[in-house]
Image 1: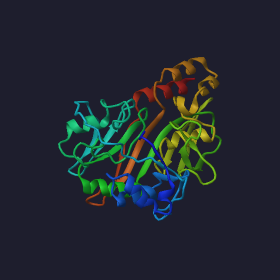
Image 2 (image 1 turned 30 degrees about the vertical axis):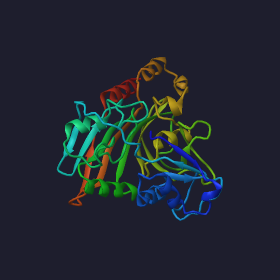
Image 3 (image 1 turned 135 degrees about the vertical axis):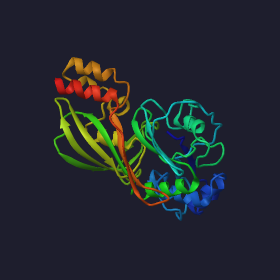
Image 4 (image 1 turned 45 degrees about the horizontal axis):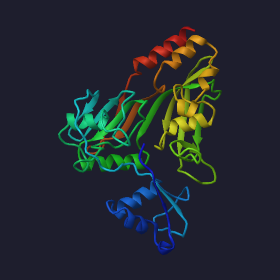
Length: 317
């Protein structure tokens, strides 16, 4: 998760455009990039999305949650990588659960970024960036597919595709409870929880950022439902927050489904879930246009063994 900055507008800054106000305080970031962050909803004013031209007012609270944390020294590490595809523009990686995508607060080693810095001589991004080539992220305890850019042109093109929502991202999730609908859509705005700023939550009244999740049930068990989940937006913890919001948190997610394992009627299954040690959430399919050729590309990742073994037990019981 990226670090969050909170700014309060003082009297002397009142009336200044939002993008200008931020440019004067975030000197290392260009005004153009700041405008993009505002339009993408990475910068909120009083918990709401604003326009770059918004004139700030005294007392406005500006929340800055940029996708790239401050630069740190990145140490290359010989961590094995599962490379699904590679050419001169990009690499598709199958990330295991337990691996953080890039360094952050208290985490400097063992990340995907450390591994990328070791295995590839050239990736997009400024020298020393803690996110070399990384276009998007998935949570530490989620496994599956990520695309990495090898050059700045590819990075910009892929980032535009994510922003324009033309990238296909499909996950496999096992959730608590029996979901009655065969298919459903969740459109609920997501922002930082007012009670716990380390967590995300569904917010009302126009606060937070728009988030859109689509699910399709593939199998039901006594206490669980297996589903495919497609996300049209890429908000922090989006799938986990949305599914918890509708009463069906992801199995293994103690943050948004704490205590739900107690509802499992089968004690053996309850023990199995307790030992899982990760979310039952896997980024199984990724589709996008190749940044150079424009060809539509699709990649799939098989379900990890630790998740498949849970399903095998559920099938037998």
